[in-house]
Structures are given as C-alpha cells and as structure tokens.
Image (tube, rainbow, N blue to C red):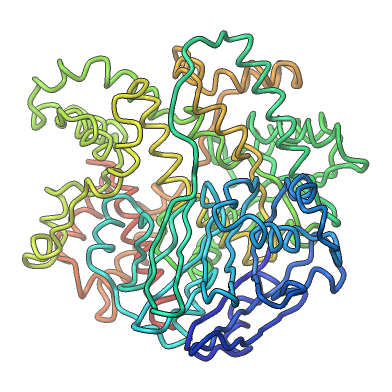
Length: 618
C-alpha cells in the first residue's frame, strides 16, 4: 500500500511527491522517461508490506526496459498469477513485480484477473502507451487532469494542485454534495480534476495525445433463483474464509478494526484460526450510552478472539479537532460523521501495525442498512403511496429525517427516480431557499446521471432491492465510504484491507436472490447463517448498531456558536454561494427540535471546514 503520482510533460519533483509521503514513509522513488516526444514522470512513496527488500522498490521497470509501473495496493492472488509466468526470472516476491510482467505478457485487460485493491500507472515505452487503472470496487482512489498535451495523476489531490492544476470549485459538484454528501466519480469538487471510476482504466496514446476510458469487467449481472439456502450458505462460508485467508498475505503483522458487530467479529474469528500470533484489535467509541458506544461489545468479542485489544474513548473536543485535521487528508468535503472516529482509530493502530482488516463493504452487497428494509416496503406499497399527497405526508414526520426522506422518495413513480430520492439530502425545494439568488437554475445538473449507467446494467433484472444493492456497491461505496476510509487510514500509513469486497465473494453475492440478503427484517441473512458456524449466540444475537455520533445534539448546544460563526464570516464558502438567512433558519429550526436537520447541517459544516482547512491552504 503506497502512494503513486506522475505526469506527462509536466515536471514532477521530490518536493511535490512528499505531499503524499504519509502514504509511503518507508522510501520514495521518481523516474523520468523520454517516450517519443514526451517526458513521462513516475513517482512512488512506499509502505513496505510485501517483499521488504530493494527488489520490491518502485518505480519498477521490466528487465527488457520497455515497461514501467507505479502501483498502490495489494494483489492477493498474485502467487496464482505467477504460475502463468513460468518463463519469467523474478528478482523478488512482490505483487508489483508479478503484475508488471503479467500485463506485459497478457495485455491491460488482464487486470480483470486481479483479486485485490489497487490503483496503478503502467507505461508501455515500446508502443508509446500509458495506462491508469483503478480496482474493481474502487478501494484505492486515483485522480487525474488532462490539459492539452499534458497530464497529471496521483493517489491524492494535493499532488495535482501543487503541480499547477488550476483550483476552481465546480458548481455542479457542489450541488451533488448537497444532494448526496459526496461526489460520484468521475467528478470531484474541483473543475477539470477527476477521479477514475472503479473497474476502469484510462488508455492514453502518447503519439497523438488522445485518451479513452474503458471498463475492464467481464462479468454481467444475473441472479440464480435456483440455488437453495443451504447451498448459498455453504458457498458463502467457503468464499469468505478464502477471502480472509488471502488478505492475511503480508511480510508484516496484520491487525483488525473491531466494532461490536457481526462483520468484524466474523473476520476476526477466521483470522484467529489462520494466524500464528494473537491478533491486535482496535476499537474507538464516544462517552455515554447509545449507538455511539460499542466498546463493551467489542471487548467481549476481543476476549472471545483472544486478541491483544486496544480501546479508547473519543470526546467532543478531540472529535472536532480530528475532524478539522481530517480534511487535509480526505481532500474532498465528504460529510460523514464517522471520519474523526476512523482518524483516531487509525492513529491508535499505526503505533502497532501497518496492515488492518475491517468490515467495510459488507452492508451494500448484503443489505445491511435499515434503509434496505425501507426500500423493500416502499417497492411493495409504492402504488398506494404515490396516491397520497407529499405535502400532507411530510407533515407527519417533521422531527425524523429518515422518515422525511422516505416520504420524499414515495412521491416518485419511476423506480430510478425513487432510488435517487432515497439519497437526496437537500431537496430541490430546500435548495431553492439555500442557494443565493437563482444559482440553482444556473447549475442545472441532471440528477439521474449519478446512477443511470449502473441502473441500466440491472434494469429488468431481479427485483428492486437487488437493483438498489448493485447501484450502491458501484457508486456510494467506492466514492464515499471507501474513499474516506483510504484517505483516513493512509494518513497514518495504515493499509486497510476489506475481505467483504473480495472479488470472488462479491461476484457470488450478486447472484443471490434478495431474500437471501434481507429475509423479513433480518439483514445480511446468508452472512449471518454462515457466521453461526463460527461465532457464539451472544455475538450473533446482538442488535446491529449503525455507528453514530452525538453531533446532532451538539449542533443544538456546544457546537451551535461555532457553526453560526463559520457560516456568518465574510471569508466563508456560505458567503459566496448560500443565503445566510435561510441557513440560519434551518440551523435554528433544528436547535428548537422542530425538525431534524442534522445531516443537512453537518453537510454545511463539513463544507465550511473543508474550505478553511483544505481549499484555502492549497
């Protein structure tokens, strides 16, 4: 796990590369190659996990001198891939060297054979071609900018901004943050800076400076309605065990982010059965009772696993301090309250390990969230709810934000529009009040563009719940949850591996009927049935806790003054784009308990902190 950077016809130096040194503090490397009329720079910051010798250093060039790579990630099946390269005399045992020669031998589309997490640049010097690639589920991000005959790319935005790429907020992207709380790929908050979509690559022809983006996935969506529950549980168990075993591949100790829930306990149990040392586990929680404190449950699981456990509380001042710091690393104004907790958790873990496994990615493919039950009900009664006037319905749920969004989505007759509405944070009605003047009409984004590509892949296949799970796995997961997970863990030089997003496991899960994922009110049904063979009932029967923070209450009390100050000052982002009177009305309505606006307010708060702590500093 590392940081990559590079450019075409834009000088790149070590000083710029050092902006991502936290991703790879063990060593740095930078080469310059003349390819036709172009100067190509490839830079790398290394976090040594596989092959700790010089044989694993990057940038890496083939023995023939015609191909080069800078790689960020881990290829868990690289030893299997090596068996197809019997004619190669390898210098070391790194996965980077494996895929360098694998692509040389089998071409860029062979990347679909990789089971892992990755973003890399591959330079074909002989044929004057350049490739930029992102993994199947978008665990590892990579950004890029094209400008005439130049290109700059990196694991993080900082390198692009420090390489002369213009810094300008894109108003359509600002609007998508208000809509979704994040920017779906390929967009970012910055105009003309993009992030590569999951399961895709850029092919750049250095002879004519033309590029195209292609998807490398060979699979097509199909559900197997003939599989029995017993068969599904047996296959899931086998694939899950294989996934965890694969991801233990490392030349350094491997730890675990442990919550109080099922997912991380399941991973931990398989880890404990396959490692020759006690697992180091890490948990963080807030003081007080409620869903924001899983410490007691996590400690019980740690005792069961026999792990070397570290736990800590996170107070309000520390939470807010970490949140402000986090924007330097997340770089995009993602409005997720769990980021400071992950920041603290990663800081704790970095004192003991370089690699952790976590339960991220279990919920989207396997219907783990409460909203999926809501969608199951909504799809069943959509015809009736469509007949009920939205203005009347919304009056019944003023104080509950989740029900408000459910009611909002019920007014849409088309399924794709309903899916979009489920995630809509600021409705058009609310935006028309929040934006300055007539800004909303000038932005004029098409909200259906966010999900349309993936919706078309599953249109008419399976049922609405399976379609929603598929879309979530391809959109919200890579460009929101996985993005801030990568940035926040790598801020502390920690590689975060996600067994639930093993390529083979997800491919199987996507073939399952939706009732194997959500059975009545039981979420992640097949996973739970598989876990019964590994975990005791005291863990299995715990109520699922969505990791929550007390921030909604803080906006009514101790955080109110800071929020008002951020919004009100002349140098604020709100001063440029938003109607401050409307913002204050929303903030005060929440404070008075008349309506739950915590998520909307948190988004505004995140935008302001991002603007002060990242945008103005770069």
